[in-house]
Length: 168
Image (cartoon, rainbow, N blue to C red):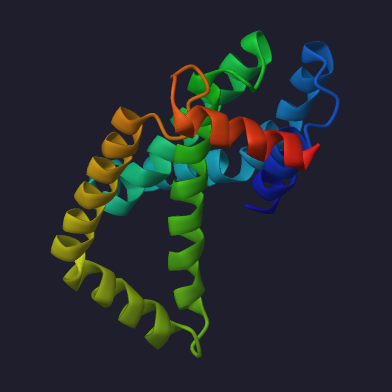
């Protein structure tokens, strides 16, 4: 997870040297950090092949490994700034965050808190779905109004230009 944080900061946040040939070498930390999870999961599969696929958590582990490998290949060929790479990195980060969150149950002082948060999030799933629908609909409303779109005529476009000029 730490290698993902470093990679995302260097590539996307800091825009460290946007040279595509230079950016290709940033996939090496991701590939190196993927060695242990891949080895561990294959070891588990070889140990108990039928029992491994009974637990749904293992599917997330396999999905994490497969999407990471596809992401490494696509980033090496096309660079990290295409939309497919960005979406895969967001997906990998969310799975990594979930796995880290579940690993915190190992510590006895954090286990009750992790279980409590997991239960609360599960109980709030209907509200969170409703909230997500509202956010999507409001974003569509702002899209119709053209808020922040410099290609549309009107007061919103001019306000965006004034905002851009004050930043410079």
